[in-house]
Image (tube, rainbow, N blue to C red; front, side):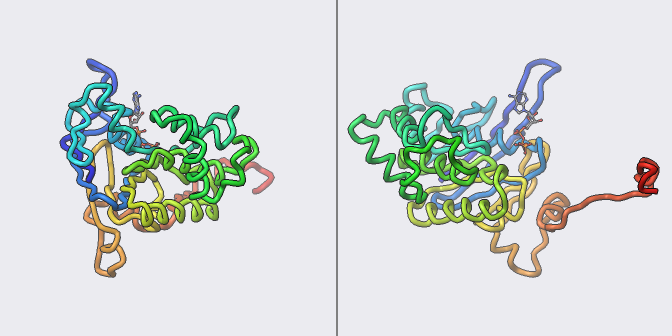
Length: 265
Ligand SMILES: Nc1ncnc2c1ncn2[C@@H]1O[C@H](COP(=O)(O)OP(=O)(O)OP(=O)(O)O)[C@@H](O)[C@H]1O
């Protein structure tokens, strides 16, 4: 179980300070998939990075499996972080290393003995069906393949928690489905608790069990995705209602006529 208790993250100091995450408390059951959704700037990525203390909260506590990460010294925190994998929107692969070397490097950072690294890296690449691309460099791979390599890199250390920061924002819709399918299959087969940040409700609807809606640094609403499937369910906040309605909202007004080039008149 992941438990956040009154987590606040403030950037800057004095009058220039800005609270990106404001007093968030959250419980995410072990083995579940939890979505964090909201508009740009809502504080989603900061909250996600609070979970592995990549961004240390200014206040509050982060428990994983009952251990309060905020109370640990650096050595103990490094140890705990081995249980937490992370994937990013832009993959964050090293371009001068092969897919295999990218995965192996993460195992090295995690303290896995050299003799075990190759086997474990290949096993992880196999989970995302990319063992045959082990010797390819990131520049030779598609966006979807790069994201699968980064999933393999995260999985290689056998984490209990997988943090995903906009994992499908940089890929096309078909590739989105494939990446999400891997995340769902991995969650089901390995029981990894998955937390996924996105601004797309479709992504949350496709794979999450529960969702937190964020606005201006706060979690304003939480609901189970099963509830969404019942016709009577309506989110309790206006942003929740906005996000679950899938329509693209684009305002057109008459003033746009005024800036039309004469050629279209
Ligand atoms: N290191 C930082 N220093 C100062 N301000 C920051 C820092 N990181 C984030 N912020 C600010 O905190 C707010 C929340 O940022 P965050 O990236 O968490 O939002 P988000 O919901 O993930 O947005 P997006 O969907 O655009 O990625 C933003 O206003 C951002 O400018």
